[in-house]
Image 1 (cartoon, rainbow, N blue to C red):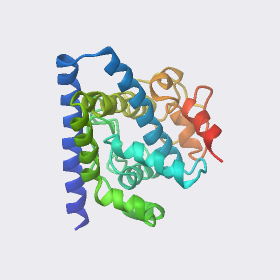
Image 2 (image 1 turned 120 degrees about the vertical axis):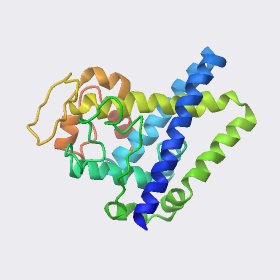
Image 3 (image 1 turned 60 degrees about the horizontal axis):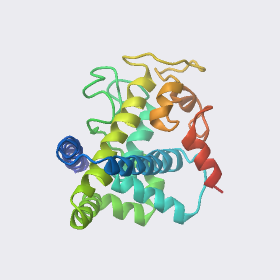
Image 4 (image 1 turned 180 degrees about the vertical axis):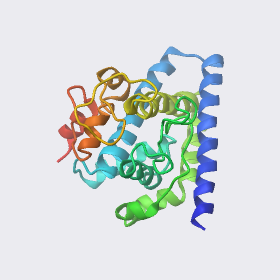
Length: 252
């Protein structure tokens, strides 16, 4: 039964990502707008705060504490980004840390086909292990979002379309694609040293994680992967960890 659920989620996520890419490309060609680009940049930052700050730093690793209002605001941003529910995303990410860069076990394994399928960005991964997110499953709100994720995402997209069709491009599809390109590609390929070893290692770990100042420009600080894998609960992993500093300021 669980394998059927996993395949169903995987198929739907694949459709979501393909749709985001197609809308982004066609939308830019047919309805290019500098105002839209500025809106997309703002939404990209918000999606990054939601997924990288909420799903990753808060829920996956408990790097900081915050109240329910801000926690669910982060989860809301992550939900509408198109990257999946917090439960599904965190389950994959914790599995990645448990088996980092091990073929067949790490759902983000980047070495085999790094440009096409080896990073958790252009293509969703099939591995889900809900046993690893029992803490999140005790939250009825997160489980509701997980069980109705695609309905919630479609509701958001339909509302945007009803207000103004071009909003679907600049307030969802394009920032979603930008996040996948900048954060997931940057972390999944560059941050794990395959095939581009651009950075350094402060810690000798049994994985390919590296740190990179350059990639932090595009990930808001998520590219100190070697430091992060050495100490996953560390909130600020490097000098230019902008998201880490932001979460540190607003956390309690």
